[in-house]
Length: 326
Image (cartoon, rainbow, N blue to C red; front, side):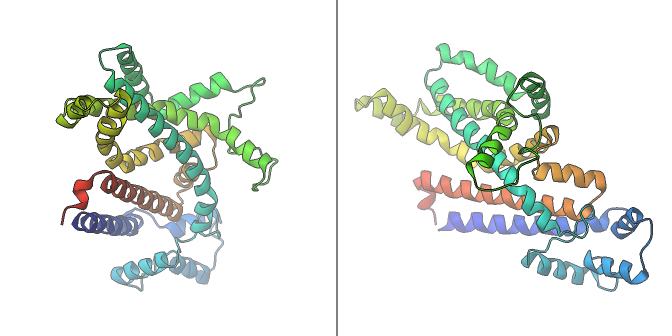
C-alpha cells in the first residue's frame, strides 16, 4: 500500500538522519572526551591506556571520518552505544537499560491516562458545546500553561511530608531490591503517583482542547446529520460517528505529543529524583558524559519515531481512505 510505503520510507530516512547527527555532534563539539576522562583520573594514565580509550570511544584519528561513520553503524548494529564516562567502564547500553524501564513505566501510565481522559472529556465538551461543559475550557487552558516542573514542585510541597504516605523522591524505597513481587510493585506504584499525576494534570488539557475543537468541526458534517435522521441514539451518534472521525487528528499527532511528554518528563524525573532516563541525561550533562548523552538522545529519538509510526498505522486502521490509496 502506497501510504504505508511512504510513511515507512519517511521514518527510515528520519532514523538515518538522527543517527548521523548523533555521530557528528560529539565530533564537532569543542574539547576532547578522552582528555575530560583523564582529568577525572588526575592524568594518571599511560599512553597505551589513552590510545585504547580513543579507539574505544570511536575517536581514532588514524581512521578517516567516513571509516569512523561506518564503524559507528557497525557498533549500533551490535547494540554498542559506547562507554559511559561517569559510570566508566559500564557500557552506555547497560546504563540506559537500567533507567529506561522506569521512564517507560512513568510515561506509559501518564500518557495512557491523559490521552484517554482528555479525549473522553473533549468528546463530551465538544458534543455538548454551549452548555455547562464549556466551563471546563478556561480550566483546561490554565492547566495547559503550567510547566511540568513547577507543578511537580508544588506537588512535593503539598502532598509529601512527615504525615504523608506519598514519597517525595526516587522510583522505589532505598531498602528494596527490584523484583516482580507484590510488595515491590506496590511500592513502585506508590512512587509513581505524584510524578505521573503531575504529567497527567498538565497534558490532559491539550488532548481535551484538541478533541473538543475537532468534535465541534465534525458535528456539522453530513454523515452526522444522516445518523441523526436514521433515528440513532445520541450516544451512538456521538461516539460511533462524530468521535471516531474527530479522533483521527489526535491519533496522527500522538507520537509528536509523546515526544513533548518525554521532554517534560525529564524535568519531572529530576525534581522527584526518579531513576529514569531523564535523570540519567541530566547527570550526563553535568558530568559531560558525551557517550551517555548520545545514547539517551538516540534512544529517545528512535522511540518517538516508533511511536509516530505506530500512530500512523492506527490512523490507517481508523481511516479506510488511506487503505484505498495506491
